[in-house]
Image 1 (tube, rainbow, N blue to C red):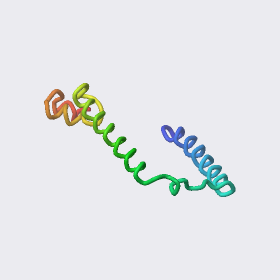
Image 2: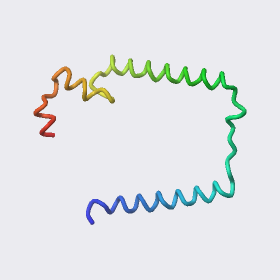
Image 3: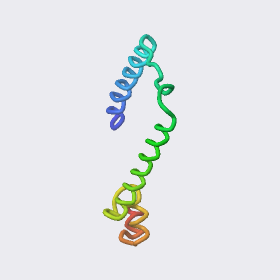
Image 4: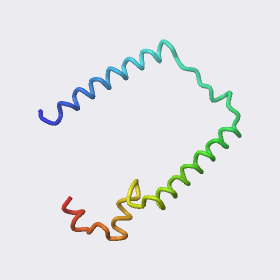
Length: 89
């Protein structure tokens, strides 16, 4: 079938993995540990994580503006890549 052959191998491996994981989860269920965590520490660690994600995004925008998720809008906004070239790609 051409380009779908690698997909068939990947999907069968994925299906086998999911079946094995579900069997293991049925016989050896994992317990939820969320009840033992203090809410204020969860909120605090989430805030610190969000702060570092925001700072990382700002740093990437300053250090490498043509890369990452904002690379294409920057390329169009500063016209470093012409619209005709993007349409041809």
